[in-house]
Length: 262
Image 1 (cartoon, rainbow, N blue to C red):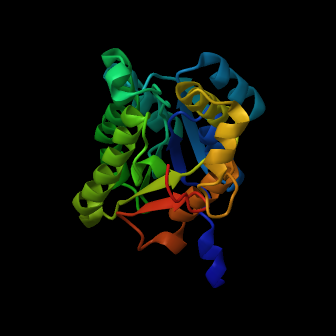
Image 2 (cartoon, rainbow, N blue to C red):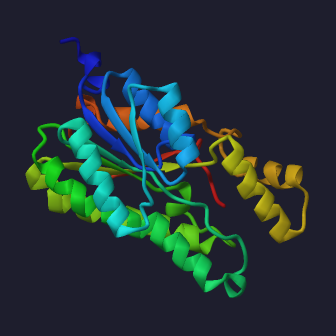
Image 3 (spheres, one colour):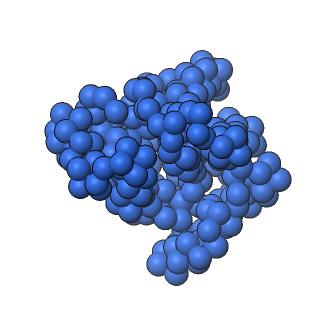
């Protein structure tokens, strides 16, 4: 086999992507599908799930709220049944959380961010890891953020969860190494699209400035001066799940154009 064929995930991988019916998650699912994997996604939005099914009949999909344990239990059972097992878990589901000063953040908004971004990762892992241990090509990718390596004022709930994911990945890589299960995190920077526009708008409102001024301030913090795309993130995840990455585990890998500070 030519060396660079190792950069492609093996055809037939059984892949579960949480939060996979729209945005970054959908692009990840599409990329695996294009690479010949068998893919199952979940999403909390029934309309997004229906749209993905219509656009990509080869991708299995179901509605699930990953912040709820019972919903996750059903999800993993359904995915395992549809796929016949599991080789790759992409723990992608998450929310932006509130924007504001720490003293102004509502406790319910804090709790919702922790539940959706962090607790959900545990709920899926506790059910998926036994399946992954039975795979000869097991890989877990957890979605963190550039906010998981930098301080992020006015976005403390979000940043706290993303820092926690880095610790989760490092610990699990040690725990699961003996089983041949690799565990890594991907840290996207500013990803062009509607979600980033909403984040910029919320931050601009919190600071009392205009949207374009706030956007320019964000771009000025990136060494390459541009946002990344959903496809950039998907490409890194495909690489991490390929044979070329067989000795990469326990890492938090930024795909962000080098965001210098937030």
